[in-house]
Image (tube, rainbow, N blue to C red; front, top):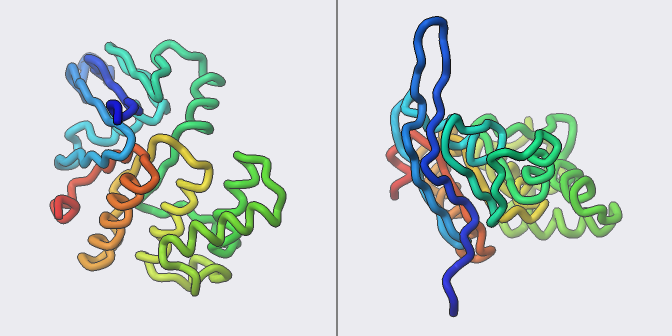
Length: 213
């Protein structure tokens, strides 16, 4: 078996912000490499540049210096429409606030992503959404609204939704921040397992030391 495909490669990436007469360096000459099947945790306190790193990795922010390659594509000098296409096709995002649509059930939240990104029929998308949610142990929550779910269940729906468009790269921003220790450990175990099983590159940004477990 050959070397696993490189999904995310940051080469000498720096990011500087200008505030009045001062320049703040959020990232300084970062080299970062993640392959399919790997999960990488980026740890550090607030203000250490974690969110900037994740935002650049997700093609939402341009670096001041250096190059960013996603799935072998050099995104550094792409136009915004080109970057939007890379985000749409290659990247899934998981946020600490879950970002679920409150008026839709779990299966509808996931189905909507599948229909938008893959053009499946409603029936095909619903079937795939059910498969994903069952994979995350949510067969009993298919038709539940977010307000009826625990935070741990909502985070699992959010991860299933991020995987619904079959991205190569999954970026998770503080995914355990709103969870207790048990639910946080369960979410991290799911991310580790899915990275390996589905051969995804997963980057988790957190200041929560529990994610090391």
